[in-house]
Length: 207
Image (cartoon, rainbow, N blue to C red; front, side):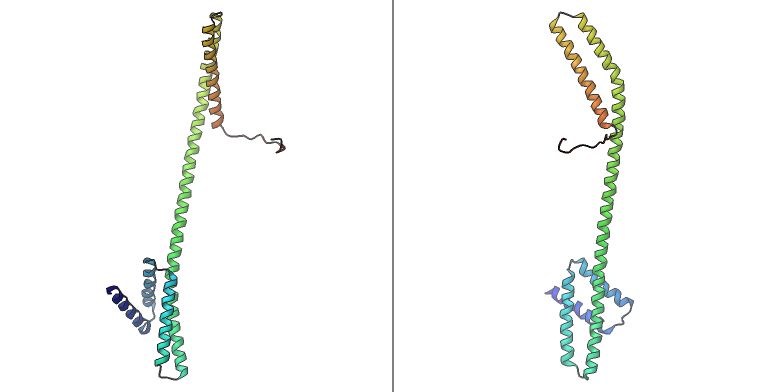
């Protein structure tokens, strides 16, 4: 009940200002704030338009039934009333449009911020991959000499223990492990290196 009375009071004030004027920039600012209030409480614009339409119909009906002048004066009065209501409708519509544009700009700002963050993340990942590539290249280079020494030592050890099958199996496992480590280092180095495509015509069915 209190809310209804409060709304009635607001409506009476709105009607008073509608007919009393003056229709200056302060009037427009007050009307615009009414539209903004509708936006803030989440009232869909269609309801504001429908409410103004009902008010228009009610005021036109009252004016027609109580007007005491001639038809020309009645027509002029109806035209003035419709102009005032159209002005209010335009101001309220502008408040909704301003909010819509602001929301759209905020969404675009967030999208751009997300794009920038994504680009920064990808740049950081690229830097990390480049660092890994440099480290892998250095590691492969430094390890190659050590692996070669392991291989040479294993071959010499194999000659020393020739005839000892059990020991020869262990030496063979050392050599296989050495080759596995060498292959692993080459794969890491190749993965981090720039991709260079060797393009040539081919038949898709054969591929």
